[in-house]
Amino acid sequence: MDTGVIVAIVVGVLIVLALVWFLGRAGRSRRDETHRAEAREMRREAEVGSAKADRTRAEADAQAAEARRQEALARERSVSADEQHREARERHIEAAEKDPDADPDEAAAEFDSRHAETTGTGTTGAGTTGAGTTGADTAATDQPDVPGRDQSVEHYERTSEPEGDSERRFERDQEGDVVRDETYEQPRTNR
Image (cartoon, helix red, strand yellow):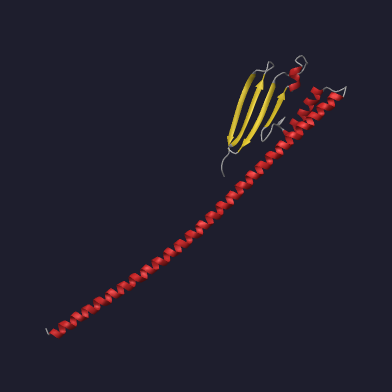
């Protein structure tokens, strides 16, 4: 073979190799650019998702704050209603004390029974706790020989807290000893 042909073959092979190397590098460059674009898109979607999560968290915090505000307002109203109830009861008792034909103990018992019928809890305590007495009224314990009166006292109270609701019922006999004491608790479920 002639030297010129060998040189031409070597030059041709070098040109083909250079062309393959150049095309491979251009393909790799296009592939890398495609991967960069996909990565940018994924980052953008992640930022949008993060912003949505932050917004949702802020909305949840605002709702929780509103719920706490409403709960505090409800407790305030409950305390106010209890205070108004106590004042009204005291006024009824004062009126019965001034009336020569009325018995203050009977007036208190009648007021308590009417209040228990309208609220379903009896005498209410402070905060979110409702408590009441049923069976004999508290005045009956001062008058043990009154015929027809049951001398036992049943007490009911209900407490509502963020963790759950609880109810407590206990009953005292004529001597004042606790004969039954039951507590029921119902935890709150998160929705």
